[in-house]
Image 1 (cartoon, rainbow, N blue to C red):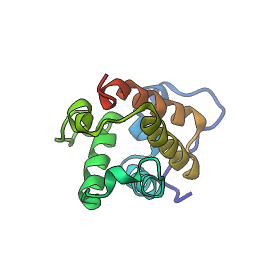
Image 2: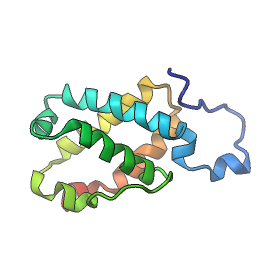
Image 3: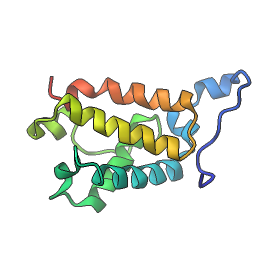
Length: 136
């Protein structure tokens, strides 16, 4: 969909593909932009977590999230926001909240036709910050 996300073939990856960042594999900045836009539509429709965004400037949130995901997925680092622990410490997030966000992220990537291998890479990155997000 959108022609932004690169589909993976079943052939063995080349050395260049193995070295490519998740950011590059997903399709770069345009793909991250599309994913963040769809992701937040899903999040705002999800009763488990939408209330966390009631007082948030969503335009600014989109910009921050795009910069964060670009950096987290191995693209250019233009993120200047708080680290995950600091950004979420006041929110009293639970495992259910984290899982809801993860489900919406996976659903977004599936909707965009991202390969399961690349979705797994994204989930690995998300899980790597779970303790910080949940302030554990």
